[in-house]
Image (cartoon, rainbow, N blue to C red; front, side, top):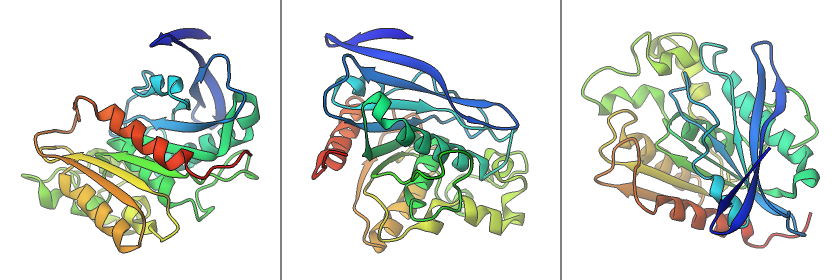
Length: 278
């Protein structure tokens, strides 16, 4: 357990809280809590790391300081593609959401005000968590009495339609047999359209999906900008509220000054409006 300070506010990190035991490994999350905990439950923001579903880690969490802005923040782990193929990753993310709801009282979390944010592969998983709140298809593990639905989603440069990725690059990338996309689904994507459809966020979009903030750089050479265009069009077509921030000069890293404030404003708007005490 450690304590950190941001603008004079004390933020406590509780690291490696186990939320799921899998045959491959135990999965943990890090919680960032304002100290002392406010008397009223706080909305929760869940960070899902990127790394092409092959690597990456929950630490560091780029949005940990939101715990000093009226939120509790969680940064979660999930099984990587060399450990288990899809949908294991989505099942793990949903298990984390359920665990957090089950422990909401302990950590001062408002269980009906949960947002999720991720970048790249994490953006893909964040979008999937958001669009599958209406189905229990991917709920596996413990705390199945809890919902894995979320109330707001921020997808930063996440893939949304694997089979359309290479149409907007200079050559084949996603369809290579050893590409991150192919390794995620356990085979070349062109040879497994059913598996690809299961992994595509656009497959599950319905009118009841939560509001989205979609962020993408137009110079992204890893996940084409068009992937977010597809997602935004599908969300709008189903009547889902969506804000699209397109940055003409940005690449996949989304190293944009002030971007975290835009993310914070989105979650403030969507997770604080019209909320009642649990």
